[in-house]
Image 1 (cartoon, helix red, strand yellow):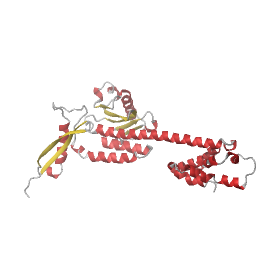
Image 2 (image 1 turned 45 degrees about the horizontal axis):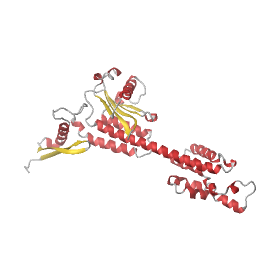
Image 3 (image 1 turned 90 degrees about the horizontal axis):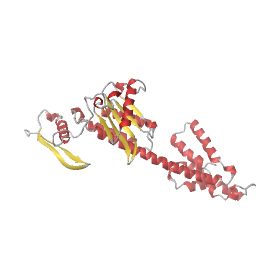
Image 4 (image 1 turned 90 degrees about the vertical axis):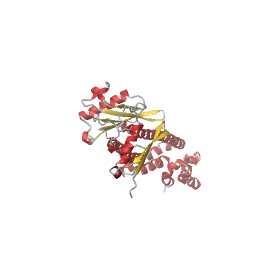
Length: 349
């Protein structure tokens, strides 16, 4: 019952993603510390030890202090990653996803503004301001001042990241705002392809960025870059698929002038009706392919029958009537077109 409680804390010593050792702290726990605050303090102390070089000076220019309330922030970081990564499983970045991302960054990074700048994807440009600073208002001096900061980050950015601890100490940024600020920007890059910048701006220069803010921002930037790369590949695959489909349709319609433009017209009418009915996006996509490809089965019907000027015999008519099922047979191996199969097979029923 009188046994003294003891603690053991450890953190890995890493370099270039390799673990070179471990720094440990071991000792007795005081009664006051035993209530829950001791582990946080030791974790903070060990982090600070790891940031010192042989002369006892912090290794990085950005502030490395860890405030006591930041010890629990690691759980908030994990929550941020978990929620954002779920959204990135889609093949498309959607505006609600981007809004949620920027909101979580502002809340987690304790910044006054967060921004995204994608030259190749202007629809994803973002400048989100913390509500207490002005909120979503798209006008006003604050937003104009922040935009100047972003423009200068873009203009003077080089390397994988840029950190300005105090704008008054940097001639490039000192005149941009009446209020001193600090900012951080990381490149959004996948392999050798650079897509733009993800960044933070704060007017509280005394507080400093969290010690792990740069790592978190770079991780999020990597996720965004991978998502954008996947989108580009998906677009290329989609264009390739569309070209193949167009070639198949042209092969059919080239058999007779009567058929030329038929599939295009069916597609246009189908899309107009689908919009009028407020059809869900996924169903519209299936209808689109069905409309364009509904007559693909005619590619297996002899041209002498398709282009016959006179009345068809019963046998020839029966052959014509088989083209919906022939179309389904032709397209069935293409898994992506499975939702359109029933419409293609039964478009004459």
